[in-house]
Length: 162
Image 1 (cartoon, rainbow, N blue to C red):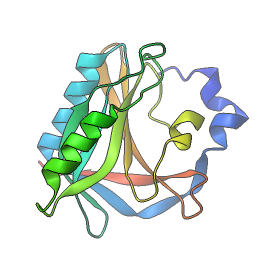
Image 2 (cartoon, rainbow, N blue to C red; image 1 turned 90 degrees about the horizontal axis):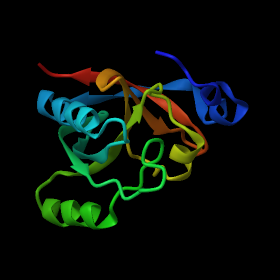
Image 3 (cartoon, helix red, strand yellow; image 1 turned 90 degrees about the vertical axis):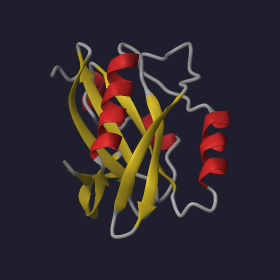
Image 4 (tube, rainbow, N blue to C red; image 1 turned 180 degrees about the vertical axis):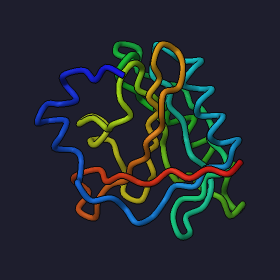
């Protein structure tokens, strides 16, 4: 995968913490498939959506749901999660024991590394998987979470069930 120069710039490198989290993000097969499918169908635009599950010794993702990307001007390299979609899922989950535990998005023809824009919109405690999609096919998935200071992303290991 070709890495655009901007991913090597000081601004992009500054969002990455050298430390990795001891916690992991565990994905069910159906959640992983849903994220991959959303990324491939949305290509060459960014896909985005919500991770649903629980947080207990890491993130336990049992469902991933695509939510509309409202960014129309720069949808190839930016996403804006539809707040109405978020609120709808949040209401649906009340009282179920499951909750929104993260946000996924794709990087068309770019690495699965967070950008300064990703950092600006990140929430503490959420997992942020990024799907690198090259020429319409998933290349890899890396997962991130904010460090304890909330000023950089640290990597999470990605685990998945069969």
